[in-house]
Length: 271
Image 1 (cartoon, rainbow, N blue to C red):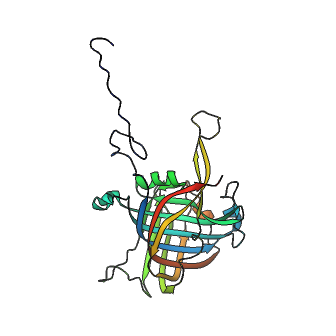
Image 2: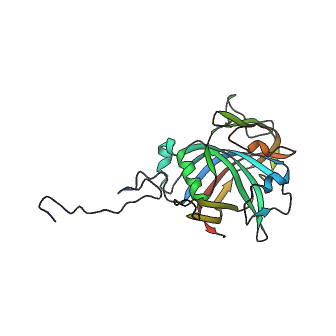
Image 3: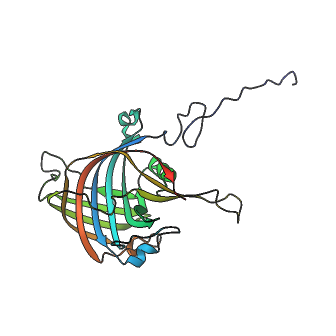
């Protein structure tokens, strides 16, 4: 070592995801578990089963029962890590999403699978990369309930809720749901463990993927309020960069509103 050279100690870098730093404070997302509380507006319908099948990569197959069933779900979320510090800095906790779920089969078991999803925050996209959700940026809005005044509907018979989805300056979906009565369920399409792919192409052209996993995940904890069912008017629109409208509404099934709390804390590799 020369007289003007000093050996600089190298500290370990920390953080669940990039950017990793000496403190880990700049990481885009904290370590799981992740806790979510939110309002879910769910619309279920049937489409051409062939349109669902073409979204299922090997080794997944269409569900044996009702293979054309689809759920489109709007969610107004507040989320945090175990520290709950994000709740006191709401820009880090609040986000909205709209996602599309179908059902599939793997080794004789039925799974739910998210085939499209749009969110409005970068940390939500990062969590999706880890969980296998195909998240993209979008503009998502839904009517919020409130127990007082005339500025919001009630979660009760006659309550009317609107929802919209747009991405890349194009509106992709819009819906109006009118609640009718309490329901024992919040639907069936999104009621199974999720079967997702975690995929990362190789940095070397033509080489196999650096990451290619079929994984299963679900809620580590769940609680929810009373579900309500009702009637929905759902419209999907064409876009040059999205294919949601190919999942055409051939037959309405039902619509639901429910407030839920979920904890996510990892999954397992299926294949």
